[in-house]
Image (tube, rainbow, N blue to C red):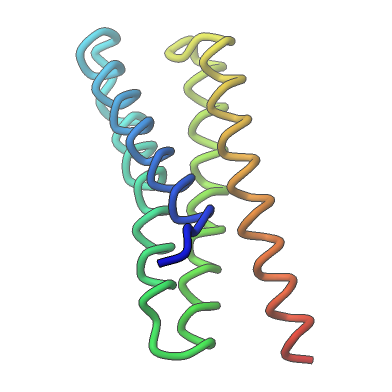
Length: 118
């Protein structure tokens, strides 16, 4: 089976988000915003997995679109948690680098599919 870069990167990001969530709950005693981050941040990889297993190209594109929206939401929660002093500037930069990379890859796949289907 060929390595799928978006599958690998989104899964690694989900693992990272779970660890950030645990840190926020255990160390910062933050339970509301961190739960939002957990949901959207892990949903990206779940939707990528569903896209890969899609029955049709339309299914694939639909799940990819959901993954992109979840990534945008995750970007928001990372910024909010940073500017409310729950996440350090260093951690923020690292998380934003990863989420921006996922957004670029997903966006590129979407663009390729749109171009192909025109």
